[in-house]
Length: 145
Image (cartoon, rainbow, N blue to C red):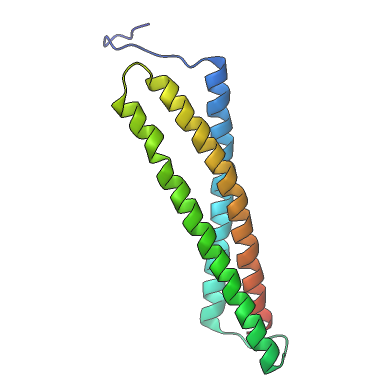
């Protein structure tokens, strides 16, 4: 099928539309979780800046132990963010295949979309973990530090 400018139009198949629809839904969910993570981080920064009086009094030894746990939480958050970054970087390969090859652009594009959808699902759960860790660290900050 050609449009008025002489270029060929392509209509995705039902299966390809299902793949793209799954990607759309996963992107929406991921965006919400990224927003929540960002808001939790802003809350952490604001509370940290305000430096409120701790709500719970703990011994120096317990405070040191909880401080170590808090640093551990942030280390896990950093590892998850590094993992997510590496996953996104790996997605460049399939996109490059679309440009480098001939005759299989749609096939390569759909493989990329499937890989992207899987990566987004993994990212969603990794960012849920980041949100939980940020929330726990925020609770420590408000109650103890």
